[in-house]
Amino acid sequence: MAMAAVRREGRRLAPLISPQSITAVRPSVISQEQAPLGLRSISTQIVRNRMKSVKNIQKITKAMKMVAASKLRAIQVRAENSRGLWQPFTALLGDTPSVDVKKNVIVTISSDKGLCGGINSTSVKISKALKKLTAGPDKETKYVVLGEKAKAQLIRDSKKDIELSITELQKNPLNYTQVSVLADDILKNVEYDALRIVFNKFQSVVSFLPTVATVLSPEAVEKEAESGGKLGELDSYEIEGGETKSEVLQNLGEFQFSCVLFNAVLENACSEQGARMSAMDSSSRNAGDMLDRLTLTYNRTRQASITTELIEIISGASALEG
Amino acid sequence: MFRQASGLLARSFLSSSRSWVRPFSTDLPAAPTADSSFAEAWKKVVPNIEPPKTPIAFVNPRPPTPSSIPSKLTVNFVLPYASELSTKEVDMVIIPATTGQMGVLPGHVATIAELKPGVLSVHEGNEVTKYFISSGFAFIHANSYADVVAIEAVPIDQIDPSLVQKGLAEFTQKLSSASTDLEKAEAQIGVYVHSALNSALTG
Image 1: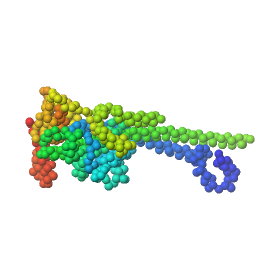
Image 2 (image 1 turned 90 degrees about the vertical axis):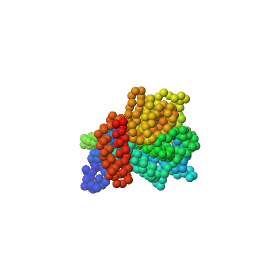
Image 3 (image 1 turned 30 degrees about the horizontal axis):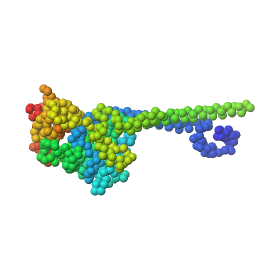
Image 4 (image 1 turned 30 degrees about the vertical axis):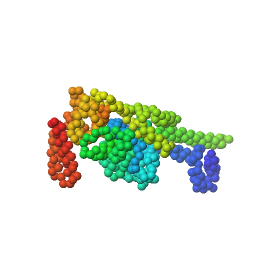
């Protein structure tokens, strides 16, 4: 309003006022609601640009959600089929997460790509808590990290504890051969008494349960079997094949690790796609809300400037009459 | 607002999931015999984070050892990409252990057997299903449950004999021309598996 008055005066005072002072005042008025004549197109332009970019974001996140949904469908079938793989081992050897050993190795499974909600942070949180749990005098705990995201988070404070880090796991579709080669690598390079695999188990599209699977080394198995408890019945089993019992137990331990790792990697991949789906879904809904609000602002701005223009015209006309 | 409501629903579902696990097609409800000492030790060290689940919460419970020998053997035959047979009741299975073909009947003594490439045959009444398996492990439990875990398995009728002969000839030739230990070992494995395939087709 003030600017309009100045400009009306300006028509009478044009030779006195230099053009620079007028342009200097313009930018400060852009943010105000009542943009006067000539500035209307600039402020609505800004809102229009924001609306365009938010609409693009909405489209992109919706597309990402569709992609994640289709990938989830494909990998969910394979994860469900692989669920039977680790059950025989748990039936034979039981599950001993509270085992007390000297060398613990925590295998953290995470994704390489981001935008998948909080599952990677959850895995890292659980891994760090496990490290605290298994810490003690004369004990050491190391990490083996699968996936970029966990590596980035763990390298910040536990850089010296990371033995091995593997990335780009999902470049080719996951299959057992690849995972068994990986398991072989880990077993060869890392000394361990107990391996704890931390991953997100896929329960449904909205629920992922952080899980810890424990695999013991053959020596730890022998020790636990002797001390009784869950593995006490292991001695009652006859051993067929191989020269010695320890050789068969060693093969068994390695086989168990690769089977459990295979299932864990598949379940984590499923959880990743599911989490990405829900993250992208909430993001596109957010973008839709933002778009609605921006549309309202845009319309209000546009109508205000039209009203201002009308007022000017009418007051100018009435000034001429009376 | 709708989004917040669905978020609340999801959170309440997650918090109550400990007592009520939504049944998923391949999982049974969480058994309450989960390792409680682990959960307690966890809570002492890390009180604010919920303890993670352990595999014992997701296993299908198995019956204890019966006093008399049951009439049927329950077989679980699993592969990395499928469960071929799950809790199937059969009369007998013959597994290719490294010490030779081993027949397993109900009431067999508890055994851990390492398997070599060979034929697994499942006898149910009058019908016999034969699979050729790559190596693996077989666990026979005292309650007449048998778990066979193998990496690859094909029904015998899906094996092409001409390809087997070709593979056998190829690997025998590679074995004779192998120079390094690694090549020799690989060629030996190839010859072994192909001759096992051969005898599976003929025998």
